[in-house]
Amino acid sequence: MKPHILIVEADRELRAWLRHHIEILWPDGRVEDSDIAQFEARQQSPNGELRGLDLIVLGANCGDGSEDAGAGLDVLRGTQRHLRMPPIVIVASGGNELSAVRAIRIGAIDYLPRSLLNAQRLATSLRLSLNPPRRRSVPRARPAGSARRRIDPSHLDLPQYSILHKLGESARAVVYLAHSVSLGHNVALKISKPGLEAGDDAQEFAREYAAISALNHPSVVSIYDYGFHDGREFLAMEYFPCGDLKTRLLQPITTLESLEFALRICGALEVVHGAGLVHRDLKPPNVMLREDSSVVLIDFGLAKHLDGAMQNTAVGVLRGSPYYMSPEQARGLPLDARSDLYSLGVLLYEMLTGSKPYLGNSAVEVMEQHISGQRLALPPACAALEPLLDRMMAREREARFPDAVSASAAITTAMEGLTAVAELPMAAAVGA
Picture: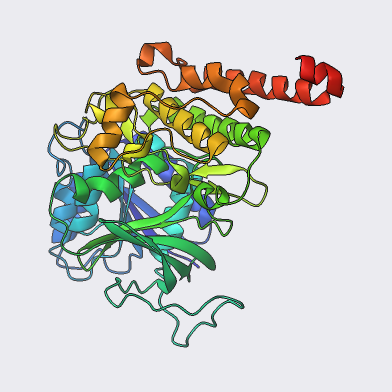
């Protein structure tokens, strides 16, 4: 492939960086670069100086994120007057997830935040943009052993994906198992439901895309694609054949295994919190499992920045599962990393006992239990873990572990204590 690519960027250093990496990707291709004024002049040229281009990499200064989401996208808007404009990838300075949404809606094929830009992300974006996959003309064979399931006829017909069957559904989205033609393997394809009104729900996919894009770690789900089609948003993400922790808990689980899972989840939270995010929706269905029993966190649609750059959900609108909510989340207060640690404590309690610590006849009743209820003690077999659980699920966040690193250390100590007791001779163990 010998693509003809135009780089349009005001910053000379960034132009040079982009050109260098693009020429490495396609040494036989043709790469040009220009500033904004030169590009706008080329658009006005009667000689069609943009003809023959395969792709445009367009820089956009979207401000500090507190401005209008469309700020800095005027040049992109201007390109939409041309019927034969090649695909455009935006490289955005500043901005936020709403800027990404606006850019895609205006017509960009992809949106790359400059703060997260690296050679790998650039290469992936440009390759996919230059090779928009098409649906195969012949039906793809159904994987051996897969059950035949009815496909929801209301699903979005995305040309680059072959939908196999539905995996799950919420009030805002449907998740399908789909085959990605461009990637050559199956993905979890999350598609927004039609008719969602503007507001926090309409921003959830963009927030999830922005949050996951900021994280590049095996403990966080990989995201492959994000965009709009026929007015609806979609996300293509890593698929986990081994299922989630909720399914795993349908089978017996030992005390040591429960602690091991808690430790792995805590390690994943270290990554999330280290990136300045709080998950806000930690629960068994959002903890996926790999074949080696390592864990992966998914569903970052409710994730928020710890620095307050993204405000909490509006007062009176509570999001997340009431069974795993921290007391401060149930009250609608600002959250920090310790809220996720409380949710992990709830999860650990459920793994140890087989039941949730707080129940009720309604979501409100369950949330009130988190705020002022008294949980049942652990069974005698794991009663030694009460101090650990008390600290993880402390009602006042100041009494909890200050961060995931401290919580991991405490869980490790608890595991060592269990192992030591198990290795004692029977009489000594009884005495302990």
